[in-house]
Structure formats: C-alpha cells, structure tokens
Image 1 (cartoon, rainbow, N blue to C red):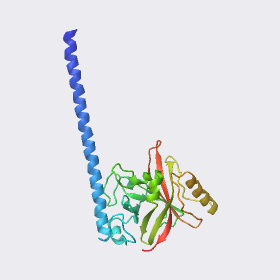
Image 2: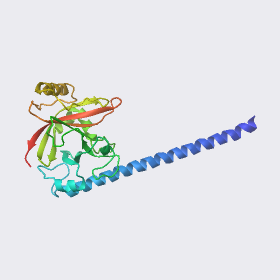
Image 3: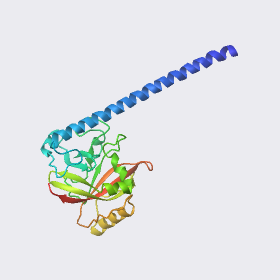
Image 4: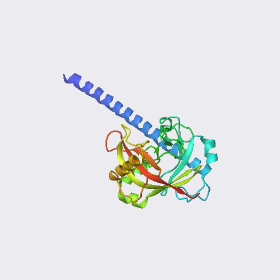
Length: 251
C-alpha cells in the first residue's frame, strides 16, 4: 500500500503546484491588462483636455473657461457638455449616445476601454432642458470617472465641495448640489417625468429626506436639476445618485 501512496501523493502535489502556477499567471495577466486599460483611458482623456482647454485653465480648477466644443465635436459628435468638479477628480466631456450601453465600454474617442465615458441617458433631450437630466459614469478603482461621487456619503466632503460646473454649447451652469442617495439600480428609482409642479417638489423633498448629507440649497418648481449616477456596493445592484440644481453662470 505504501508503495502506491507515495507516487500518488507526489503526482497530486505536482498537479496542485501546476494549478497554482497557472492561477498566478492568469491573475498577473488580468492585472496587467486592467492596468494597461486604466493607463490608456487616462491618457486618452488627458489628450482630449489638451485639445479643448486653454493652456491657462488647470484641470478642475478653471473658472468661466470656454470649452472648445467645435474641437470636441470633431473628435465625437455625440458630445453635449463638459462636467468639472472643483477638486479636479471629475473633468470629462459628456456624451449622449443612441442607447445606454455603448459608452459603458467605449471612451470619448471611440476606443473600447472599461473606463467608458461620462454619458447622458439617451432618453434625455440632450440640451439640459428637461426637468431632470441623468448622467452616468463608472466608479473606477483608480478614482477616475465617477468614483469620487461616493465621497458625498460624508457630510464633511459635501461641505468642502458643494458644487460643480457644467459647460455646454448653449451656456455654462453651476451645479448646486442638494442631495445624494443610495438607490436600487434594478428599477427606475430616478425619475424623468413629473405630473405637475407639486409632483416635482414632492420628489425633491423625498430626495432631501433620504440624502446622505444635508444642504441648504433651495429648489423651486421652475428649476431644472441634474442627476449624476454611479455604482455603489451597499447591496446587489446598488447605485449612488448625486442631485444638483442648474444655475446659469457667466461664460
């Protein structure tokens, strides 16, 4: 019996070692591919910024900068706006595609990449004339795209970053943030349409009540709002949605 046990044990050990080596190699390959995609995506967006922003405008810290939308449209005619946060963590063009799938896996320049693009819900009008315009972006592990939205689960972060800027071909807007909520992406928890002013204001109140931070920003029946949405991990298919009021700003 012993004569057979030792060879069998060595064979099993060799097989296990081989499986471990293959597993390590596969993990290394996946990590390499992932790191390369991050690097290529970041490089592509840096190139877009260099193309359309004036040299004097530092990333995420510009005021009243004129975005070269003609140059952006040459790169991608789907562009509708440029979104920028004051701390520079969000500084991207916004696109609107024919569906809500393509830009999940394609950069602004059309290259296939897991960073995707910041994109408007295809059901929106495209010019921010809707009462609520919804914009999506991935929560990337390196902090890019919409990863920083989850920071608004902390009141202190909101207090230090209460607004963003939205640049459009028709005019610029200050986004005055007023609520942030964890929602279920399995159903339409973020609303597009409202029966009347009362319905809209009731919706605003419900967002403020469930918000992860408290804001003094007032939203009236005549205001338009914007919703920035990304993944969250409180439960399966969770989303974090950040809401802001659009206030016209000078160019």
